[in-house]
Image (tube, rainbow, N blue to C red; front, side):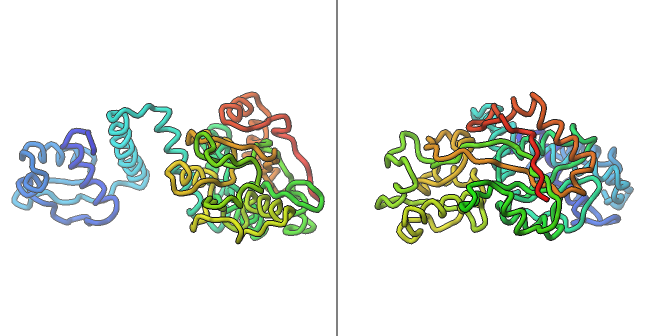
Length: 364
C-alpha cells in the first residue's frame, strides 16, 4: 500500500496518464468533485494535486472549462518526470516493506534477485549503442553488482545484462547481438573452460577471456540437506524433484556430462517440470518448497538461506572480441576487476576464489 500523502498519489496517477499518453494535450481532466468522489477524499486534496501538476507545467485550469492537459514537457523534463514517477513508486514499495519489518539489506538483496529474473527474459538492443555495453551470457550474481558499479567506472555508460546461458551468450556475441558474453563452459575432452567453445563458435577471431572469478558450483538443497545428498549420483534417489537449468546453460552441461560419465540418464531423475533461467531461480524454487535440489553457485544458496554441497570450482570468464576489448569502457571494467574493490565485492558474496580475477587469456 502506497503510504505517501493522498494528494501526491492523485498527482502521480494523473502524471503517469499524461506521460504514458493515456490523456492527450487539450483533454479535459475529471473535475475536482469527480476526482474527489473517485478517491474518496476532500475537494481540497484534489485541488492540491492539480496545483502540483500545474506547477510542473502538465495541466492548466481554464475558467469555465475545468482542468485540461497542457501538453507534454520538453524531452529532458519528460525523462526527469518519468524517473521521478519511478522513484516515487519504488519509495512507496520500500516504505511498505520497511514498515512490515524487513531490513534494508534484505530489500536490497530481493531487488537484485528480482532484477536477475527479468534480465533472463529481457531483450537486448539489436545494434550497438555508444552509451550501452551489451552483455549476454550465463547468470552470475557478481554481474548484477558490476552493472550497478559500471556507470561510475565508465563515465555514465550502462552495462545492460541479459542472462541467456553460456552458449546463448557466445551465440549472441558471434551474431553481433552482444558486446561481451559471460561463459563457464567445461569441455570434457580437454578438461578446460571456455576456450574450446569460443574457437568453435567464433573461428579465426581474436578474443579475450577475462576471468571474473573461480566460483563453487554444487547442489543447492534445503536447510539441513534432508535427503543427505553428496554427489550428482545421489540425484537418482527416489522422490527427489530436481530443478534443471535451461538448455545451453553451462551448469546444465556440466551436470549432464558428469551424469553421463556415471552412466546415468536424465530420465532416471525425478525432475521439476520447469527449467530455471538463473541460479537465483533455482534457489527460489527450492526455498519455496517447489523443488528439492538443483545445481547452482554457492552465492545463490546463501542468498536464500539454503544449504550447499560443493562439487567443483569452475572458471567464469567474460568473453570479449578484440575490437570491443580496445574500447575505453571495457578497459575501465578490466581495471576495476584488478582492483581490491572488486575482490572485496566478490568476497562479500559466498563461494568465490579471486586468485585469477582480472587475468586475461587470448584465443587466437
